[in-house]
Image (cartoon, rainbow, N blue to C red; front, side, top):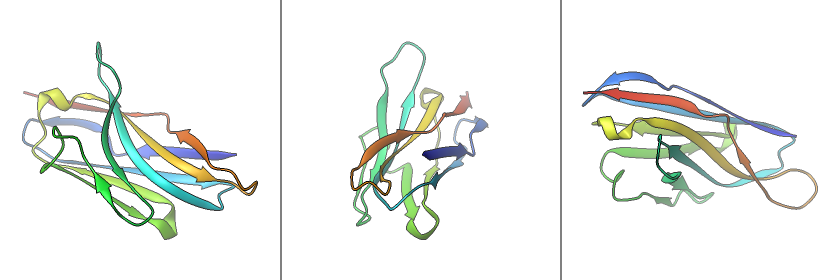
Length: 120
C-alpha cells in the first residue's frame, strides 16, 4: 500500500507565495514521475507541474515563471513552490506519483488534496 500526503495549503493574498509538499510512503521500490494537479469549482482537473525521475520538469503556460516543482528522491517527496499567486490559482491541489511497489509494476497514486485559496 502506498500513501501520498500533501501539506502546505492555505489562504494567501494575491501576490503571495505558498510551498506545497507531498510525501509518499508505504511499500515503495521506486518512484517515476511526480506531479501536481489542481481542481477548481466548475473546472476540469488540470496539470500544474510534473517532474520526472531525471528532474525534467514541465509546466502549463499558466504556471510557467511562477511555479517551481522539485523533488527529494531520498525522501520520496515532491514540492511545489508557488509565487505571485493569483485568485484564479484557487483550487484543491493534488499530488500525483507513479510508483513501483515491490511487484515489478508501476501504479498511479493520488493524495487527498490540499486547499489553496488566493484572496484578491
